[in-house]
View (cartoon, rainbow, N blue to C red):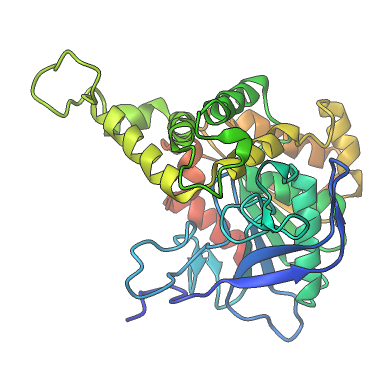
Length: 374
């Protein structure tokens, strides 16, 4: 039985691009594949397509399930579907797994045609700019000349910004959620600690571990645990876990005793089984590198001069990793150029993860914005 307001059972698709793609690093990728999914129907005018860009640990599976026994829907299922904020009765929604991704797109796990072995450490670092260029190739292959919108949260929001900068005539709206024009030193520091936990894992083998049975799961689980701490707010941690113990009394050992410890260990173990370590370290580098204004707020206004799309920028009060002040930098640079921008700062307790949550006011704002789009 199809769930209420669900897109139902979905299948992944594959885009094969035979045209070379020159990356920011100077590396020439002779050809590549992108895993993607679509929901809803493209209208006769072909002007109702919305591209969704994923965050650090996301992928192309946005909504629905792969089978009736699939326990987990796509990562933004609460947002995408019939009569949901991003309504698939009106919009043709596209989700794509970025280059270097862990779930089907060309990346470190893929076979290198030259060596006939997995790319491993030889796979280049793809940047936000590279991802957007590859997305544009996919959109062109679908015979879509102009997107109704590009939307993304966190790292996905950076991609939406880059779309507006690089292809101003190809999008009508950019929806940027819980994002920033670049990373702060603190955020870069968090990413470096996460990478070091992976790179120094004895099983990492310099990134060449695919032909054996062992994976660098210890490092990846620590990286994920660190990430979860930064994604949640102190209030959420306090209300959800506090100082709750698994047992009645302290055990006076180094085993898991507090509920928050148990939660982090569970999330780390789960993620390490599903995600690829080489992808994780490359995605964090893409986050670090993105800086269209080269660190200058004044330059950001100059960079935004050619933007033609309208913007919706959304932030969350408890998000200390991508704070509302970072979103306001984006808004100011847009206003400096008289670009149509709407801004919403949502009072929410969930921290950075709030962009993934089904918060009523947040969803109502998105639904209102999308309803006026067509």
